[in-house]
Image (cartoon, rainbow, N blue to C red):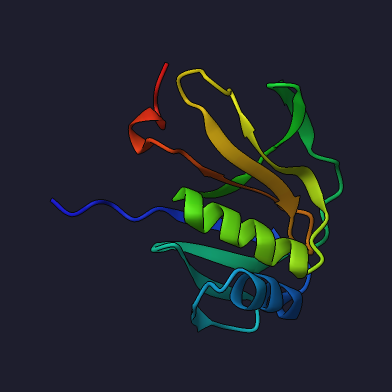
Length: 139
């Protein structure tokens, strides 16, 4: 059985800004689109930016390893090399991080590099990486 693909539809207030951010800065290939939505290939998974009014309430946060993590958020688990290359690309692209790229849970099961930032519509994203991918679900 093939690995299922993940699908996420999320609101954006400007499709051109979403296209520039996800397609341009993050390098996600664009799929189908209309005047109301755009499909992107997000590391082999389908995400769909849907035109919607701006969000009315602020995100909630939860404390994780000394940082306030925005909820909700989505992202991808990358290799360490891909993670640090993306972090450099985002810094060069002027992204303001909610949580700067760093390693959390050092020396513990689940040690990971992580970073949080927002897209132009205020959607929170987290990218992370593990030196040992078998630790993704470690307890």
